[in-house]
Image (cartoon, rainbow, N blue to C red; front, top):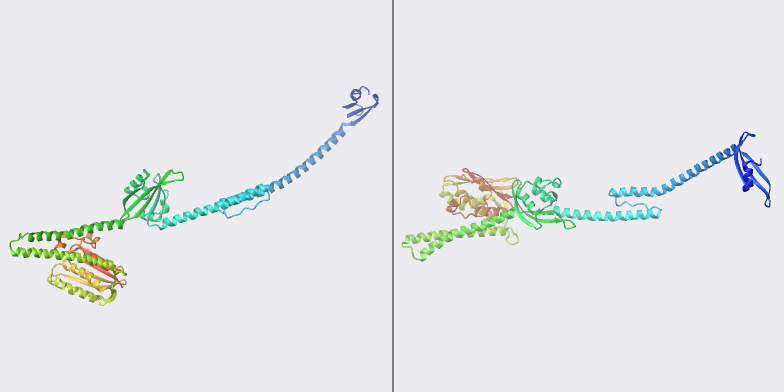
Length: 486
């Protein structure tokens, strides 16, 4: 066997190995040879042979053991990884669920603090964030509620409009002025909510300038209402113009009062100037001795006396109005309310007017519940009935009848004075009780009226907490009704 590869390798290198088929054993064998030396001298070679099938079996057994060990290790690693991942993922999942709770608005919820230092810091940060958000949201809600309360309690209408003329928000007062629903108005254009050209032009001009604007506009919903509108720019935090704010006040009564005041001043001036001019002219004529006859002299004095009496009547009626208005203030001039029989008051008024009625052959018919009693200031109520009765006699035809009816209506005492005179056109009824307002100016002055009689009646009745109304048809007569609370 000296020529075998493993023997030759031993001689050359001291160790040899070879795998080959053995014809003797009829199988593959693995040969291993090693040298036996004595000093440096090779004295023998030892060779061992082992069937390869045995090695394959051992190798396969080792592989199976390794595979089994690998599977066991993989299973152990998987279980350990699962446990570790669950330990890590469970706090993360709890944080995720907690974040969803925060997102749903439940900011009072508190996250549990995990054992892991990093996740514990995250949970504490999220809890702190939720506390801050909850505090800031509560502040914002409180501020919004305060603003809503202020806007809701305002009598003025407030409307916020963006640069595209779309309504951002409005308070209930503005919705009432526009006769629209507040919730439905937001997000709609001004033109959709209010079809008013004056308002649309004002909004357009307000958005075109950075300066505040003010104007009066008229709305018809269905009656006429006058609104005083003030605009000011709306800016965001960066100072950029984002719209305009309209503040609207209903000044209908104020404007009407201003008109009435102007009319009153003009009417007073006219009513006083007319007799004064006549008096001045006649006095100058008399002073300059331009009157030749005693008859003309006496006629001029009569005219002067007539105009002086007219001035005296106007001043007296104005003073009466002033006294009645002051009478409303109990501390200054209290009314003397007493339980009084209405029939007695009417009787006194009729006695004063009887001579005028007799001069026109007019009969005064008193009827109804004359024994009714009411708590009134008898002197003032007598003056009111006297004024109404005097007017009824003035404007009634000769030989007609003026009726005074007394009744109890809806818990109130009603006094109705009806004439069958010329009547009053419907267009005049709304202003009939204004000072110096006359339906027929020429005829009223000719009959000696001051234009204050009905205004005095209205103030007397209002001072008693009642109301006065009129129902009239042109050519058929009028009925004035005084309703006094029981």
